[in-house]
Amino acid sequence: MKDLDYRGLRCPIPIINLSREILDLPNGEVVKLVSDDPATWPDLQAWARMTKREVAKIDEITFTIKK
Amino acid sequence: MGSITGIFTRENSLHPAAREVMLEAIDRGWADPQKIHHPSRQLSQLLDSSRESLAHSLGARPESLHFLGEPHLGFFLGIAGLQLPRERSFYPSTARLEAIAVAQAMEDPRRIDVDLDGLWSIPDHSERDLLILPTANLETGNISPESTHFQGRIFVDATAGPCEKMPTSWGAALWEASSWRGPAGLGIFAVQDEVSWRNPLPHLDGRKTPASFSPSLAIAAAVALEGSMKDIERSRTETLRLNSLLRRFIDEEIGDVDIASSQSALPQMLSFSFLYVDAEQLVDRMSRSGFLIDSGSACTSANLEPSHVLAAMGRLTHGNVRVHLYPELTEDELLKMLQTLKQHVLDLRSTL
Image (tube, rainbow over the protein chains, first blue to last red):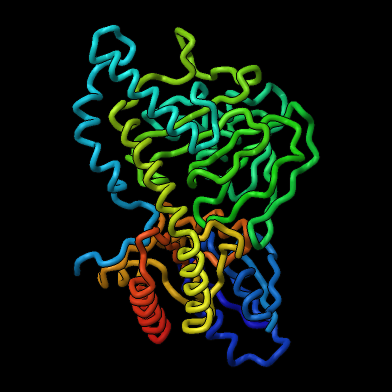
């Protein structure tokens, strides 16, 4: 599992950085993302729908993304 | 900063017909319509005919209409006035924040979840419950579902603009004159169900609203609505065509776009979000190119919170753009705006 800590970064930077990071990962790999921006969770769900990925919410600021 | 060549924001200049009568309205609107002097009686008659004209277009009885000098006071008057003690008030999660704030200050607020198109279902309820019913969403133009199955009290939020058909039965309603290019600072509040509504404000007499509104603005609002309704009717087919053209362009020519306005939304409003784009930079660049657009993204709001409407619908909140298609818009003007938008989106994405 790859860990990404985007605390302090504001939208749309977390989603942009995540999409860049995920490019080099093998299919099926899971990313753990930490972000305290209130826009991250709604945006992550929309991004997953648009790019056909799976996301889950662990707690208020922690999310997982499966490539 | 270049000159403005295209206004696509929710705010626009006063309707030309209202602008034309504004000076005369100010000249005639100084008196107190409650008094018996000649100018007062004349003004009172003028206000009555404005009220009749507005009521006819808005789908309410003239005697039920009241002018508000502070439009958003109408949310409190409507919701608190209809809410019964210990009963529930239901509101869709995409309702206006002003309406949600009042509902949440009441005893038992209940949020109704919406789907990707902003649609929602009438929940189980009793005839003592209240429903806050936006006619259309202020950001996306998505039209609310039919409320015919709701047996309780209904507060209609029509601040997104006059709707084609009011619900069969409603308790109170609110409109905002600026939504039809009338003057800002004028609300129109109506009480249809006199039995259910109780004035929630401290009051000395039988008045339902404070009389602190500008009669001149009320006269101009009626003229603006008449003009806007004619414009909308005349341009309906063309606006639908331009709406389709816009949807096709952003999807095929720009791509990676999430369109929050459903196909059945009001055709003059469109909300869409570009993946991997900072809306603040996009709005700024468009403004420098002469095109004024709105955005619901967090980076364009004062509190850094994303649009609660987009978040509730599960739509992308960053890179959001909202455009309003006015009746006078031509295809050529729209295409110029879209080509500029495309250039800026591609430029911003290339700098990632």
